[in-house]
Image (spheres, helix red, strand yellow):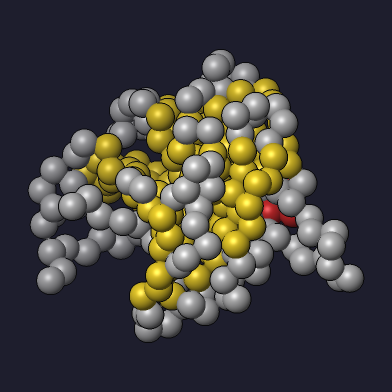
Length: 238
């Protein structure tokens, strides 16, 4: 049952809730903050727009990182949702996805692979390490185009398009290492973590899930068929 509707001027591609505020990336119309104190009467509070296409975001306390493709990663102070305030930007060619974890940003950077940025000083982000994910074992290299990333402990999980799920050891963030690649036969567009499971949104296969293993995932995957293409996945608590 639909409770309410709010015009956003763009397609909501990523959302997160901070207390009574919803923060959403809405493509070329930027990032919006919405008051959801009364879910049946959502109210737009502010909008921030910069170069790029806001398609993913990750929040750490009073700060938000927004993956904006060729516009890089925007760093916003969201302590006052009525006034979204930019404080820094991380340059990137293909910032498709971003995850903020233990003082670091992990960026799914398309053809550039995985990029790790030190955020101990949010005003001055500095590069820590990167991992080239180009597959050179194929006669015609497959562009991995990682479009989403999530991090748990010392492991990063990337949605690697045709290469499926990519599992990366980030115990040393200055030297990430690919430890497993699990192809699905489709195109993995998003990844999410929930307890001891990894969830995938696959354009062709629907919603897929697999239990986490030690430093990786099991090759056994379950799936849930959906109508149309599965582009995003978000497990619900409980």
